[in-house]
Image 1 (tube, rainbow, N blue to C red):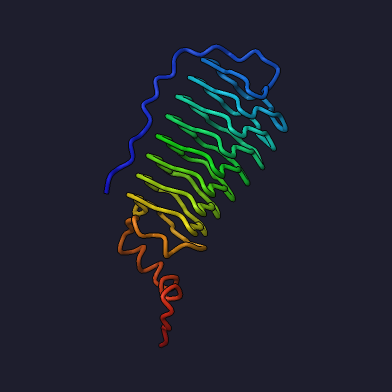
Image 2 (cartoon, rainbow, N blue to C red):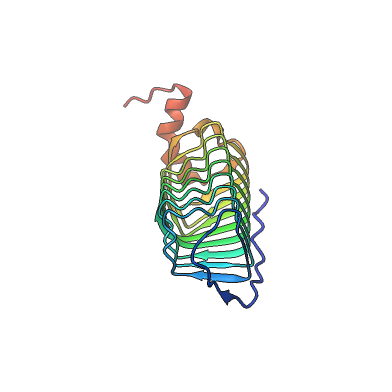
Length: 215
């Protein structure tokens, strides 16, 4: 089992962002966007390099195809944030409170998701490499058709996770304090779980294998 490589962030001294909001294909370099209401704005295709996005509201914010590089995203909150086909590389996502965030087709590489709660996270067809979910709560995350390589779940809660048609390689689930599967139990080849988790998943595995369990 190969462990995930964590991001090595060296965010420089940042300038406060003075702009009025996001712009499609905008270029944000070395700035901090702090406590801004970005609800409903369109930052599709934008590039965030050596940035901090702190305490911003992202209800319905469109960030499709955006790129976040060597950046820290903390205290974000919003519903329906669209990050489809976005790229996150060497990024920390800290204490996010998101619902229905769309990351389908996204690329996450050397990313740490620490703390917070994300409901109905859509990671369908996404590619995750060297990603760590740490101390967070994921409610009904959808990894359908995603590729996960060197992904760790540490002290986090996974409720009704769906791995249907996903491909897993060096995925460590042993650190999940709660592990519930809604689908894709047959795709866990390439993952490692603990003996206690195996017992918890026994009913799901029995159904998958067509085994009847009777007293």
